[in-house]
Amino acid sequence: MTVLGVWAANQVSNTDRFVANMAPLIHEPAVQNALSTRITTQIEGRIDLPALIHSTSSQLANANLPRLRS
Image 1 (spheres, rainbow, N blue to C red):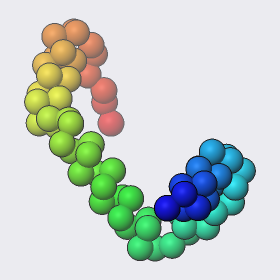
Image 2 (cartoon, rainbow, N blue to C red):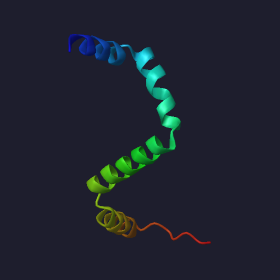
Image 3 (tube, helix red, strand yellow):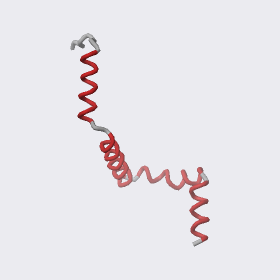
Image 4 (tube, helix red, strand yellow):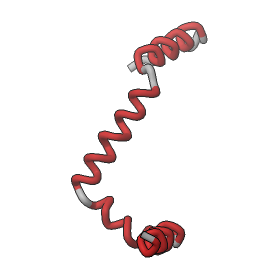
C-alpha cells in the first residue's frame, strides 16, 4: 500500500510527469465523449437556460436599444 501511495504522489505532484501521462488521453474519442457529456450535464444542471433567456430578452427590451435591421 505504501508503494502505491508513493507512486501516486509522484505522478500527481510532478506536473510535467502528470501532463506527460495524461495528455495523450485527450485525443481518445471515448475520453472526449465522456468529458463532453459530463461538462454539458454540469452546465445544464447549473444554468436555468429558459430563465436566463427570458431575463436577458426582458433587459434588452427595457434598454430602449434600436432594432437591428437585416
